Image (tube, rainbow, N blue to C red):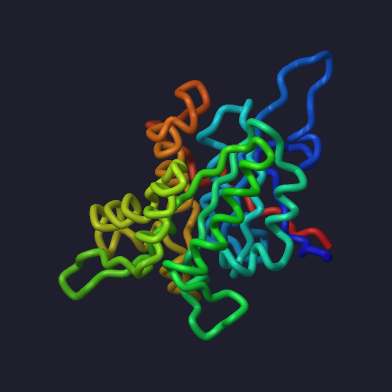
Length: 263
């Protein structure tokens, strides 16, 4: 099938996807690639969506250049629709032994009124996630699960409120059962929003003169969430200290760019 023009971005690599995963000349070690399967919270955004920013766009600033990022996350997809549209197959066609597949879904799995996207947390959600795990493992790559980043939601007393129901718990249980590394981005982002509070978190989300978006991020928010992801990759020993950088350094939001979408 024909995938959308926004299906694939190799963020920070500056080379076509095929070059990012191929071997190098003269027997030099091939760059490993971290592939991202996910939704709009991680996806590359384009000029028509600025300043909205996915955390996957900011992640390369926190990784060494020896580790390329292939960001396949796409707006509006669930674990089900991403796979059903052939997007998982596109990743598995390029993934190589030693690569990583980072999987973050739930925002759109929660759409109970849309059968093309909805999954039930303890049954179909886990069944679809297993397809990502099995596909990566079959190709010698390492799958990594990431619980969904939290929305900006506070109660009347200013407490950050979780919004993903049973999906994070279902993913945590699957990670234990399958012995897969888990990045608990949901718990960490909820704690971060609580620390920042209702007012300060506005600058982390896509709040503009025309939007009050409590799901998607500003450059500042995308960088903060990418930092949570990178630290979790290090904590879980998916990555080694020499694979990461700038974990405790400021990353200017001006580093984020929004390319024009391809025709």
